[in-house]
Amino acid sequence: MKKIILIIILIPILILFLKIFDWAFLTKDITVYPVKCEKKLVENFCSEPDGPLDIIIFRISRTEKEISRWEKASSTYTAVSLYKNCMITSYFNWSCEKFKEKSVDSKESFGLNEGKYWEDPPGKYIYYVSKQEWLKLRCGSNCSLSEYLLFVLLN
Image (spheres, rainbow, N blue to C red):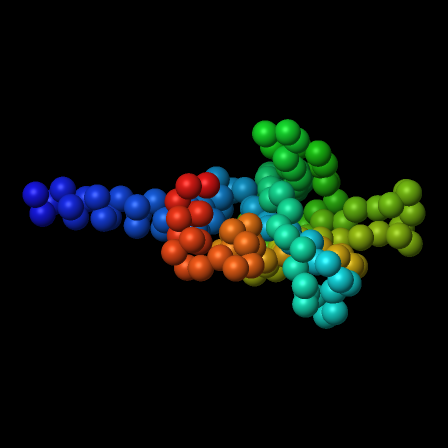
């Protein structure tokens, strides 16, 4: 009987552990968690988060030196962009350049530095957080710890 109770307690804890942490790196995918800010960002700080946006997945091909960007379309993720002008040193350190209107003067770059996503120039109303922060924002601003844990278990 004690073993059954222990299993009943341990299963939700294991599920929580698996859901809270980002395991996409095991598949060589990088997941970034964007959040929209109600007001313009000041030094990448948002005083009034508006809410989390759909996650973005980057799939890295080190052999081809290219990165594809996957975004949610309806209920599935679809490749929306392929970047070939990339410098990849590892799955946690890479950068790509994208050009607007075929002009070198209007280039933008983005990438991962020690596992943290960045964009240059930075977005005015969008910033990126950890999976835990993103889940907390999805749960809601008045979400208690128990509500958060239940939210993570059910989503």
